[in-house]
Length: 421
Image (cartoon, rainbow, N blue to C red; front, side, top):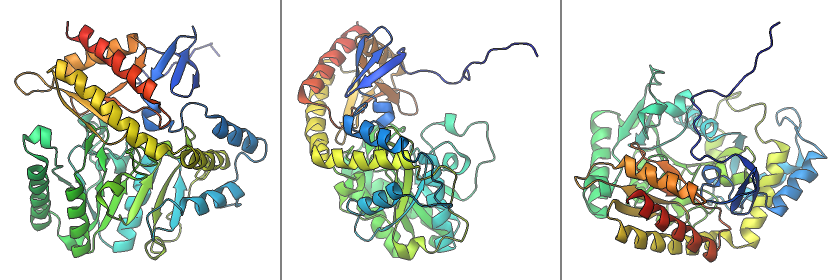
């Protein structure tokens, strides 16, 4: 057999030029030992920073004891302890969990549960939402056509309703909220009868769609309509959960309780783990055999998740996310004041987007791209998002300090001067 070499798919494009050798806290180091301030956190995954000592120790200890205990074959203590522990942070009455590996898997599990529990087929989602890349999750996703293009026909039964994106709509937050709720009522009257609608899926902050918080009044309006029509409200907390927004869950800002919570990303500080949570009365309506998976609830991931919860609680990281998020947003607003091309700075907690807009109001993707690259060159790692790639987002670990926030703002200011020169 002839020798051959292999390479990664050419479609996997790096957002930054860094070849990472190691990570420590809020920093990544490349193979030349150059230090970068990492405000990507693996797309919001390394919630306790890179290689937090307590998470590392928990994972190392578990690796030496039991790596894989397939949880429909045998049970293991880390899974049981994690399930019990999550009860203390989940919304009241949401007391049953099903574990998988990725956000997409959890979204699909939530959809499957919602359809089986209600006997209804349709799902309502919102313009700009991102719920994953697997087939059903992609069918729920409208953050950009790249997720949906070329794979049709997509799953039927999905209705897309407007999101209250006040900046894009040129409205106040109150006006945008009223507009979006009116349009949702119109969808229920014209496209998906409430009797056919199983669930409403909502990200408390649009992630890939541009880092746009859902106004609290909008989330409360969704809860009211869900209650009125017997529709399940599903909070996709894949990116917003575990303290990211300055509350433990993104929906906490609105004071609403969803029927199903989806969690992943920051749950295990970088180890693959996701879950859906629902009340026992709802979870028991799933059909036999509809929940399972080979790697779900992996013992090492569960051990890391337990350590993550300990660190979040002991180090006060939810409160830190709120304080540092306010400091970061204020600093970024100051930079934007000097650069009108940044039309909007928005977010909750440590989940902040800078939207670049041309004088005519169109998306300015080119300047956003230059600023993103200039930041990396100066040692600040960031990501872009939004359907046009014109939003530069900042997602530092929850352990970020005031000095590190100030350093990031200084680097971002320098990057903006270079990008707009």
